[in-house]
Image (tube, rainbow over all chains, first blue to last red; front, side, top):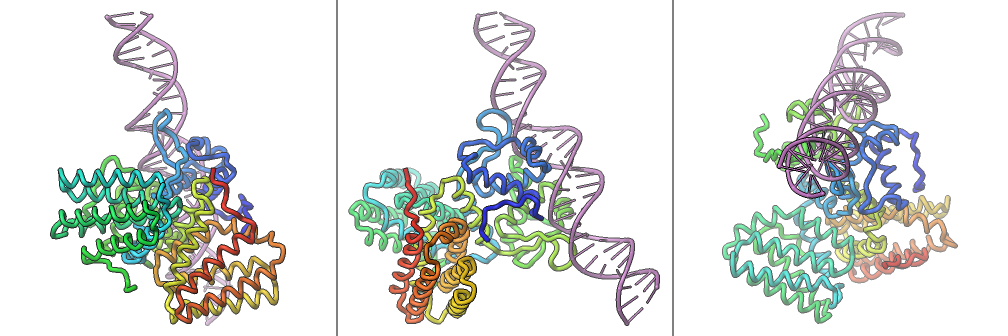
Length: 246
Length: 246
DNA sequence: TAGTTGATGTGGTTGGACCACATAGCCTAG
DNA sequence: CTAGGCTATGTGGTCCAACCACATCAACTA
């Protein structure tokens, strides 16, 4: 029933045939990250389909973050296999938020779930924590010099992603990134309306340091608690998107 | 007519322009689930692009689970807006697993995380639990009559998804579904090799009933513990350890 | 009245053409 | 001999004009 057998004579749409062929190349290891697909014209000829169908398949893979297409010649050109799961998940989540079928509150709630788990699981000596510490310093610098929320938030996102990465689970990392991306505009919108950004930034930084310290002390439970409070507090301060009572 | 304020950056690829236009229609509520897009030819003319570019955009939306394209005439034809986030996330995860950049162990781990949370959060009177109970009965019937692992597993998946749905978080539900889909072939592969399927099925059913009972008793903590043991035990029985990482 | 048949409109597919781009390599001026 | 410019080549990006299979509906026919 779940056989991996490919029926090339079925009523499958042409671009799906191409898609299946490429996915099989990936599964079999004949194509891997960094590798390049045959040119669109070559692929069309090999699979006996039109270039249009090949392009539709490639467009899907591009949207999924599996390939990157580049014009011209040289190493940057052609269609090359990459691996950017966050792009695909983020686009999908953003689109479905647009259809009103994915409440922002559910996204925030899921983010808390994943990030809390990551904080609890992160090892005190994870190298990603060094990056997180560096980012904290940069946020301090931004606060002293420019005091712009945008720059601070960009670093804040990278800090939280670094914490998630420290848990060592690629799926959780990707999902975290995509969740952030899908509500990025939403977050920035009410951040701009905060009454006292400097105070907020200072508080966020203090909380960041507490979280990092807890992880460094191997106190996963405390780190998780702090992370949950940190995120919930931030969104509550914006006066929006409070997840259901819990 | 379409006096939107989209930034028509000249460096944007044509299909992305179409994508942006459609996404804006969704955000503005001028397009919603159940609604139909203009025909490909009409859309091409309105946006002053080729039908090819329109089709590439639609192909992406289709892969993202945002639209469904149907030929012919009538209510089932045309390109209609749907909302199937699971399809997009599942395809993306499956593709990236194929590129060896998302370890199956990470997916299983994430599944345990999400499903444990869902079990702990599900309300005892959630209507989805009735469906879960019905599915348990059907699994019993399958076991008595046919004893095929495939049919049983199909119901098993629906049971677990029902539990996830009971938590009332659409993002978690979608992610759960996509995680299952992405490792479906993987799961079925070693299930076929289990030494005594009947015994395994009976044990799984007993555990299912325990989990459901715990949720009905409003004992979220116990339900979560049972779910974690249930999933971990299943994958362990299949002789699947954590894939070597390095 | 019941069945057939054609018109209409949908997405699906194809081949060909042209464009912008980026490299590699030849080729000329100095 | 070198440095610069120019051309050949190959890539993806875009567009067009067909044709197909399909599904409905309305007009027509027995």
